Image (cartoon, rainbow, N blue to C red):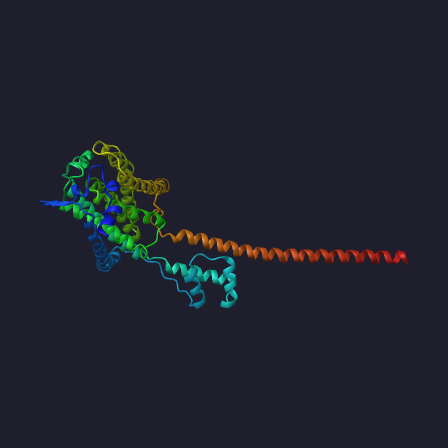
Length: 402
């Protein structure tokens, strides 16, 4: 099995530059270590540990903090119990047609309008509360702030932090300090925990993009560690953490109703995000991985995979930058940030569209019925008028005939 894995999964021709073997990377010297793929196995139990710590943090710290900051939840609407509609809702959620609702009217003993109102109230009850959103944002804020502070402390004195060419000098025989190793492993464990909890977290508009982002990030961290791209990897992680904690703090104050603080933090976040993700990342990091690295080794399949994953991240940066610029436009010209375009509950807009569509269809059915009744009455009146007119003509002609 080990021979098969080394031949197919850990092929040196794919993952490493020509003439480089895994023996050139692996090992441990002094207070530093050389990366080995098996080092990443510790990330999975740590991810479960992150989930347990998050569970405790949200209940012991985040929940009392939300009450002190004045986080207000919407009043839960009471939904009349109806087992048949409940079973239909749990099976179909939001994907149902008008004909299916009309088929439920007779078995439930309700009108079409009553069924539509019941489903609307049922969906509102499933919406996540502001407290849940606040707890989730506060956990991410604590981690991103801690990771950014620790990463900056670890990298501020390194040569490759200021000169990205140093990321490749001496590659692949570059020892990894213990602090950089744990910085890498903890970031990987955290993103694994986010991916494992994606089904219970608040579902947002960019849900699919977040899944792609988590998978690309986990793949990047894992591959860059195995191939000893740790130096450039630490720079990439630090760039991402620099704006993420600002976004999470803006969300926290938004859920607490502190609009001015939220708007101010959002503007700072937008400046940092656009500067790091649209300028520093492509102009410094991507340029270094694409061009400067070729001064130290020749291209190989892993080189293209690594840069392809970085391009996926950059595409997501552009997508999120578009949403942020749209919010900045609202802030500048409308005077406030009305919605979090990147992170609001995904179901809000969809439900509004569905509700309006259901109402329009119902109104159309009503107007169609009234129109048919009017046409029918109009036709009846026309027939009666014609018969009356013919009778009068016959009566007027009878004396002349006599």
